[in-house]
Image (cartoon, rainbow, N blue to C red; front, top):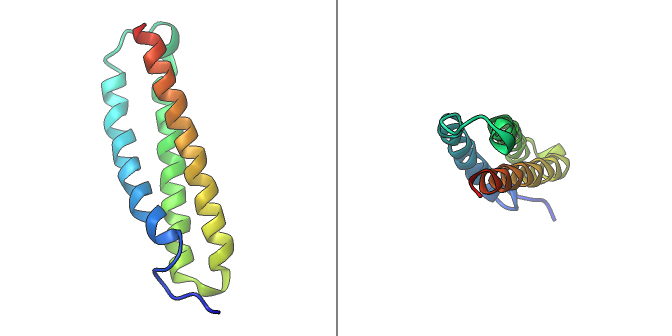
Length: 101
């Protein structure tokens, strides 16, 4: 059964990834206000990597909606990149929690 545009996981990944790019980009300058000792020294780099993963995920998701012949492959790539971005945000939050302890 052919897939119609806007159906599937990509229609959820696209707006969520775009929102998380903005959240990461807003958090980077705030993290830079922390003292640069221990865990806080790498949190901004992890957030930058997360935002790059999210923007790539959003791009792949958009492409999967627009290009029908490679939709499934692009959607799988978008999902993988999205989950990797969530993992990076988790690491950044873990580091932030440990730096405040």
